[in-house]
Image 1: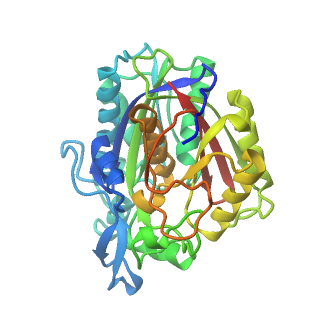
Image 2: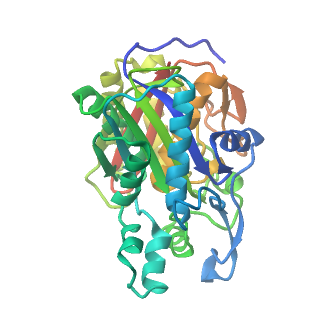
Length: 391
């Protein structure tokens, strides 16, 4: 690994992290799973074509606090937030007077909505109905911790996690909150969802994701489905932060609801704007944490970005072959791993299985520090970039 320098000393610190993923409940479970080099996906019956075949899916296993509710979605939201808050406190964080909460979502509690119609026939008691609303998980988190700052959902397709982090930084800059909790959640991996994305040609369910999802490698067929909830405590009144969010940017292709604009001009502009706002020169970027879905469009766009903005200098890695693509939570999981790498000195990248980009990391590698750019691209042209640096 080459020696890399540190970035500018500003931004907001990641003071605590919590995670629920296909590997299981908790940050350490996620980390062990990544270090194993094996995908979180396993075979599940009823998810394949015709609903009578098996499919490779990285489902979040049952767990969490049953007092939160019967649905895994709510339990995962609370589980990840509780872990992040406990972690931040253990590392010296003390909540300010005003703590805000931002929840990044795409479809919300899909299984709960399905049951509302197919099991309950659209009829429920009012308390059961309220669990369907995207605002309810935020309200219950605010009540549990006694937070009284601003609270809201953000949704920008698979760019939602980055969008939530950028919004948190705007709140801190504007003085709307002293600290912000960001939670990114997606538990929408149902047979019908898998079927639609397979038909779109984006998802692959008939093979182990490590062989089917090959970002920056030859022969990639698309992404494998996953679920997750990742949470962060973000603050400028820091204890021992993992990493610093230096800045970010968002753009939109204004081109198509699915396809990426073919010149990639707005993705490139997004990266350059993010770097400018973070006060970082492209040559100072050491790592590119790719969106890395393994689809042909995404691969072409991020290869272009790597060449046009960074001169193919940074090390590049993608985690979706391991964690699966958890839609609205994907960027959150990947930011969590990037932040953990700063403290632990290790990058648990996916193993390379085919001819690849020369800067693609192959499996677990020493992490050299420096600046990381995190890309997240959502259908509908939702482009986002986050710039991370050392604590």
